[in-house]
View 1 (cartoon, rainbow, N blue to C red):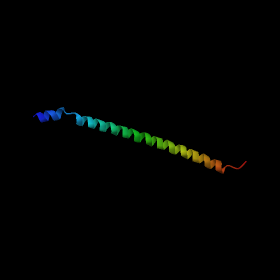
View 2: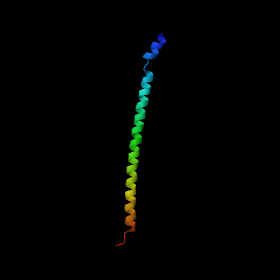
View 3: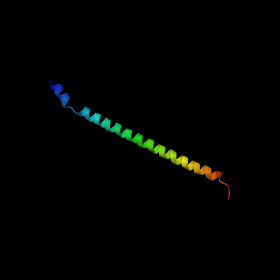
View 4: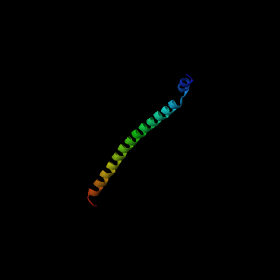
Length: 61
């Protein structure tokens, strides 16, 4: 009976689960931020590439 009381009173497993949930939330936030940053970088590089192509095709002065 004491063993069961000790197991119920033990909160080490709950703490590990909480840390796991925090790590999962941080990972989801990081993936979301990196996805948004990747899209922004893609748009920026496409804009720069387009301007460089237009500048290359412009008539010489």
